Image 1 (cartoon, each protein chain N blue to C red):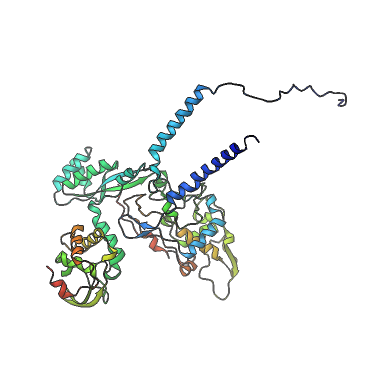
Image 2 (image 1 turned 45 degrees about the vertical axis):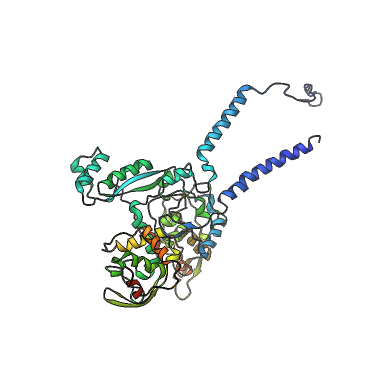
Length: 200
Length: 316
């Protein structure tokens, strides 16, 4: 092969600038764009949850999410149990039998089975001094829990105490707790046995 | 550059638009998430990881665990089950209500069916249907409730009880979400495998614990040393092929213990408002402290609190 004698193939003449000319944008492309835009808006409307930080994918909106919240109804005892295990059980023990030198028992206690108005006051403001429970004398002080528990939580936990471990007393409603809280007001002193006995 | 200002504006809006979408909007949406109450209880969720587990996150990151393991359980939907827990005192009325809800059941079958409670009467319902079914049962004097049950392929694999949400990760930096699933999802690892000794053996030789595991062994997280006087309490117990020669022992380095503490702190099952479910989980995972972690190799079950039974309804 003789390279020196071969000529490079002639290049086609180049145009100065490539251009698309004055061709208009096809109509079908515009239609497709608007269809896609519409589909995007529909999807956005359906699944964005309006950018709520609490709405995630299987749920489409806040209302949808609320429909799937666990129901109150029969689970009020469950809620009471959760509050009890978190707060009360530290001293009163999970089985409601109390702990010697720390807190008296709940099982069959006349304070638990007795008047709701008395029982609600004890966790609200606390109780100190001598107290007779099932014939045993206790002389301790129970701190006030009223500030840290909502009416619903307090009612749930008191109902749990009144209806567990063989206790069978009426349930306590959030309205009762609210009424007692209003009567007690901003009391900072714990109750004594005599004061509680004076309450019907 | 006849179009200088136009080019500048185009570039400015392109960058500003993406900054707006990728930085500002997510920050406004989830940037101020805080610890919150779990559903139906006073317990706060999430809790910050204990110190050793926090160090373990660095080990997890440094070894590229997130390249093969994700930490995001997904959920494709949520269904409601109407669960009957007690028949109450009016058995004939409950039986009638049950037959109305389950027409396929014959009466002797229904009596038999009622002997093992609690169990779901109807499954896979919409919220309104479940409420109606529960109303029928409660109207007959029975005790029934609606259970919220998340469903999806990840949940069917046993990788969790609900989807992961942004709140699960507020104490993690960086968030080790991962994008590939060469190994299983680890978002609820400590719920599946709460044994620290298992994790140490699995890190040292994955196929000891999982047949045909594709995970590489992480033996550089362990050290082989001569036994001085008495063997170390956290020395690994290994089968003959892997055991060190007599007079030597293999013990986990601090990195391995931190990584295991981190793995044992992986648990995101608490029922939240944004991820509701009815199954009350066990107590939140607590990684073993330095003392418990140090003896984890020898003593299995040091974290038995993680395996507290849940009060899930019995499924037939």
